[in-house]
Amino acid sequence: MYRKHQNGQLTIEEFHVPFGGTLDADNRWVIFSSLMPWEELEETYAPQFSPTTGAPAKPVRLAFGALFIRQRLGLTDEETVEQIRENAYMQFFLGFAGYSSKAPFDPSMMVHFRKRFTEKDLNRINELIAVRGKALVLEAVASLPDDDSDDPDTGSFEQISLDDFVKPADWPEDKNWGTLTIDASCTPADITYPTDLKLLNEARESTERIIDELCSQNSKLCKYKPRYDRGRARAAFLNVAKQKEPRRRKIKAAIRRQLEYLQRNLDAIDALTAAGASFSGLKTHWWQKLLVISELNRQQSILLYAKTRSMPDRIVNLVQRYVRPIVRGKARAAVEFGAKISVSVRNGFAFLHRISWDPYNEAEDLIPQAKKYKQEYGCYPERICADRIYINTKNRNFCTRNDIRLSGKRLGRPPKNPEISAAHKQQLSADQRRRNEVEGCFGSGKRKYSLDLVMARLAKGAENSISMAFVVMCAEKIRRLLRLFFITIFAWIYTCQRPVFLWKALRDILWLETEELLVTV
Image (cartoon, rainbow, N blue to C red; front, side, top):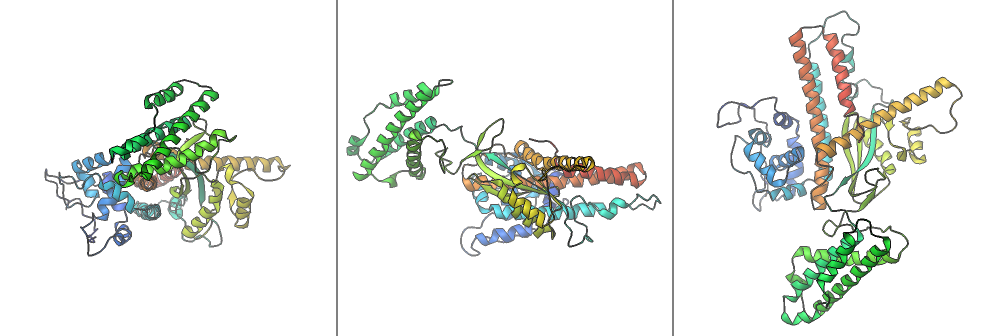
């Protein structure tokens, strides 16, 4: 059951603090509370519950706010609850009427919170936060004092009004506007590096545990237990696994031996079930793991004698069975294990476009992202900055038809005029520098917002953590922009200098902020 709550924002004066005083209006959690679209969130959240039956669910502000805090600070579920219990600003952000030292909910509720917000919901929330943040920034610009100076440059920045990421109202409808930067990356999952021998050893030990559980149901079933020394099987694995650089011949022999042990165990489980043993006595995760082990045995049996090392839907972890190897070709790691994400930066704000656990060619995402851009702004981008893998014939033809400049080398022979050739090279260099914008988003997300190691063990939880990271990055972007405007206003009041210099300084600061960490990963 869900009861709708009044999401009207309390003022910091109304928030009850038992130890006296009031909250600071410039605190980050106070600013974040004004950015969040609480009403739209409740419209998405409430239909998931019955309005009349069941225990009352936690409010949407508490559920979403707890996920936001966890992702922003990189905490565990237990530590998130403790931080909320100890911090009055976080409780204000979550919609509390006053400070309370009691835990707001059990840490296990975080698992349910993650299931209630889908990737589509969080992407929509991200767009709403960006729209609301732009409105707050424009309001901050409008609050800057006017200047009556005769300087022709004075007020020129006011006319374009943050033209770096807000489309001017008088822009022609048939003319493209803005910049779209796209790229793909991988968000590694929290799993050990998978090798065939290690996976087979883990599968063998798991099946041994399952056999013991089935045999414990009836003492007469023990005669079906495989007759091999488990200690020797473990020693055979360690004999190769502990070698620094074992030869391929030794690895293959060890894999064949572990496969034989695993096949014995699977045959014994079939015999036990035929003799009357029941899987109903097992815990859920054991019989789920048994299904994965059966598929792993099939895959490894094929790879043992195949000439290729490639396998569709290859299993790399027995628990997180949805994780697949993603070939990246990077210097640090040629292959990563996690979700592949496609990201677009639309005029300074990063948005998650796609999450896939299976590898795919990211070049197919360019056209959908360009259409999404047109849906938001009413026109296609003036230029698309992308990696070389995106520059194929299909994407080139699409950009040519819609008058979009796609970054990359031009087709055909270079022009004979050296000035034109130099201009093309300069433009290509500028587009490549602008592409660093999306690389900076990846670097920021992996260093600050836990995208370098996704700790969630369920697929839905991992997708929620990835999507929430981009929501947090968008909110942080708005907060930084607002802080820069407040600093500029304070500097104008304090120095009483001519505003034209502050307008130019503000324009430079905003341009640097829009570039979003011009550092490649």
